[in-house]
Length: 354
Image (cartoon, rainbow, N blue to C red; front, top):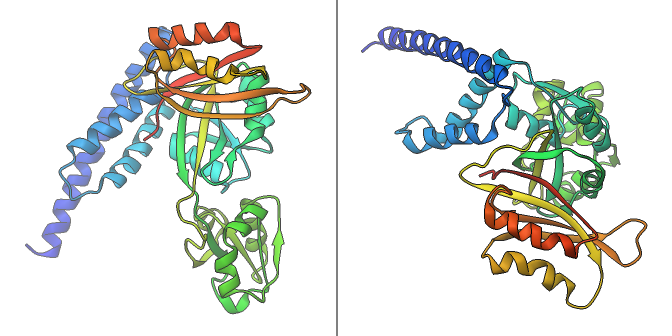
């Protein structure tokens, strides 16, 4: 067949895809009406995961599964915006890794709004000015984000979903020419994570610390003599050119993000429950605390401790366990744990991210 004939076939398929998308949108609108009438949540993370997994498992190719997920992420995002626009607040400014995680979770059709701090994110959601918030909770290299843990101590909000994002840094500038660079700017952690590469390629160029990688991208957009170490999303948002991709010294670096909201989701096929609890330090107490989970064969996925502010020799523990709090075994274990604690809070049961 000629190129013209093949292109006509592509056009015909595109027309069919467009028709099917609009049919799907019509059904989504009807679903939204039923949910609204029944006062059900419009955003259901477990339903989205089921869609992604079903399509990936039945995809015959050659269209890659990673692209399938990205395409349907935007289809679902646009569909949700037809039911009701979703406002999501994230740790800004735009082009931070939290912004990228929010886009990965909710798509580009959601109303994504930056906040200046983690407490501000919690405040926006608690006051009803945003439906959801996206906050970092831990990094594979740096450990827990203590500001987020501190906010969970005081906040009634629940974890409703989680998301993992690979942390990768690019060197960006307005012109994309290495000969124009007179300084390199970024957040202190980003500069540290790229130190070896920068020493090898730009050892004579001064490095300047700024508040965030996104702020670094903003500065580079205003001054062609400045290069920024930032995430790839900043290229489109700030009109920058890539000098080098993936310049971090260690490539196996992931950050886990949480989606916070008011209502815990119903059980799904694979859930994680997060707990926050504390107790007075005494011999053998931690073993007693973990015994209710061990006895019932429940899988502890993470446990981390840190001193409680203002309480001498008292510690706060952040624990992840497999399962949903609505399941009898886990509910019994938490019930057995509670009398041993001076403080215990279920932060949420939510679908595990893959």
